[in-house]
Image (cartoon, rainbow, N blue to C red; front, side, top):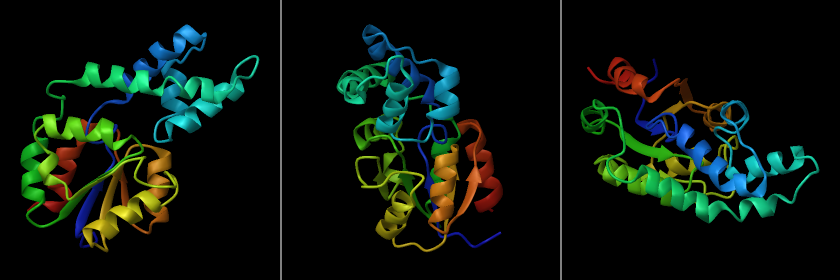
Length: 203
């Protein structure tokens, strides 16, 4: 196992199980336009990609095809709906804060997500774990999103690290971490993360 100097976490699906809520919020704001978004399609095709790419894909597949920007105009409503549904104390794994506190004694930590910082930061703060992360990279922080390596390269640059471990749940995210030249581990659900970090990085 390499000697990691840092851990770079994807957010949705790695630190917090938010993807079903993202899907539900998009489905609700798109329904009045006559656009259906179902979990099967979202989970198979949309996790780990930029929302605009998701909407372009949906617009192209509509019959007849639609202007994707008509769908993108609903983003402010979707973001506000997500915020209100997730406000309060987000359901992070109970063991996560203790593990992050131990981990940051020897490793630098960052969040690297395709979601916007405006969606991520309040959840980290409300969950009491924001202080553990040296930086947060959101989809609005970079020019090129996952699977391009820019998000992970920028996180490493900001932290001043050279040997990160990347934790990801999507194919786009895994590809982004590998393209950056970093070791990656695939995560199936946030509940796996505390035990995995103890096994790999904590004595």
